Image 1 (cartoon, rainbow, N blue to C red):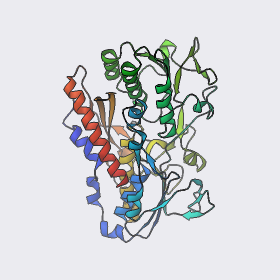
Image 2: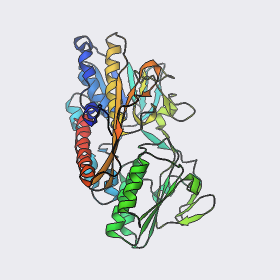
Image 3: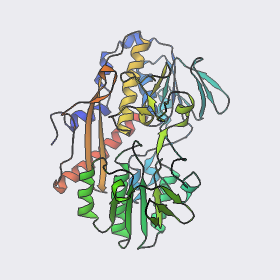
Amino acid sequence: MRTSLNRRHILAGIGASSALGSIALPAIAQSKANLVIVGGGFGGATAARYLKRLAPNANVTLIESNSKFISCPFSNLVIASERTLNQQTFSYVNLVKAGITLVHEKATNIDGPSRTVTLTSGKTLTYDRLVLSPGVDFRWDTLEGYDEAAAQVMPHAWKAGPQTQMLRDQLRAMEDGGLVVMSVPPAPFRCPPGPYERASLIGHYLKTQKPKSKLLILDAKDKFSKMPLFQEAWAKHYPDHIEWRGAADDGTVTRVDATTKTLSTDFEDIKADVANVIPPQQAGLIARTSGVADGTGWCPVDAITFESTLRPNIHVIGDASIAAPMPKSAFSANLQAKVCAIQIAVLLAGDAPEATLLNNTCYSFTTPNEAVSIAGVYRNSDGAFASVLGAGGISPLAADDSIRTAEAAQAKDWFAAIIADTLG
C-alpha cells in the first residue's frame, strides 16, 4: 500500500523541480562560467539542459562520443521482439537548438588542478565546473573467461545498442526446445530490477514463440529488487519457462567458456543455446582515470551538490556515483542531474547549497502489457543519502490484472516524459 506520498508526487520529480523557483535567477543568468558535461545519457544530457536554462550566459558544453542516444529503459522489450531498436534511438538536435555546444568525441583525460578536459582529437577544454556522468563499465577481469571477445558470443546487452540486437537475434535464431541461460552479477550494478524484467520478457517470448524452450537464471544473490512481485508473475505466466537459482542454490557463475557457451558454477557446468552474461560493473573509465572513483570502483560525492569528495569542482551523477540507497536508474540519473544543476547554479551565484528531497520510481514489465513498480524518497541532509521512512511504496501482490495493465500504461507515460525532459 502506498503512503500519502504517492506516485503523482514521485513522478513530479521528472518535471522541472520546484527548487528552480528558489534560485536567484537574474544573478545566475549573468554568469559567464565554462560548464562542461561528460556523458550524454539520462544524467549528462539532463544536466546540460538544466544548466543552460539556469545560466543562459554560461558556455555549456556536452561531450558525448555517440551521435545518437540509445535508451536502456525499454530495451528489454526490444530483446523480446516487442519493440524495435529504432524506437529506442533519439537525436541530440534539441540540445544544440537550446544553445548547448555538443562535441562528439571521447574525453581521454581530466586534469583537476588545471581544470581541463582533453579530447581524442587532442583539443583541450577548460571548465569552471565539470559534471561527470560516464555511466558504467564492466569488470572484465572478475568472471573467468568473460571478456570483450566473449561478449560477442555471449552478449551482456547491458548497454543498449548492438548488444541488444545481438541478444534479440540469438533468441530468434534458437530452435524451439533450446535453453537460455542468464547470469546475474553481485550488486551494485546498473538497474537492479533490470535482469528480472528481462527474464520476464524473455519468458513471454519463449512462451509465445518457442514454447518448448526454457530460461534458467543463475544469480549471485539470494534476494533482488521486487522479488515477490517477479516471482508471483513468473508463477502465474511462466511456470514452465523460467527457473531462478540464487547463490544459496549454486546460482553463482564462476567461469564461462564462450567457445561452447558453457556457464559453470561451483558444482555444475551448464551448456546454453543462448547465454546472456551480465558482468560485474564499475564507474565509467574516465571517472576512474580522473581520480574521482575510490577503491570500490564507484565515485563518492557530497550528498547535496554531487561534488566529488575526492576532486573539487567535479560533480558526479548517475550510475557512476555512490548515492545509495538511491538505485542506479534512469530516474535517479535524471533527477540527480537536475539537483546538481541547481546546486551548481547556486554556487555560481555565490550562495550556499541547501539540502533537498530526491526520489525514484522504477517500473518493470512482467509481460509486454503488465508492469509493477517501486518508489522511494530520499533526503540528502547531514552529509549522506538516507531513505525517508514511510514514503514511497511498492505495487501490491495479488493485484487485479487491471492494476498491472494500468502500471504498464504509466510506464509508457513515464518513458515519454523522461525522454522529453532529457533531450528536449
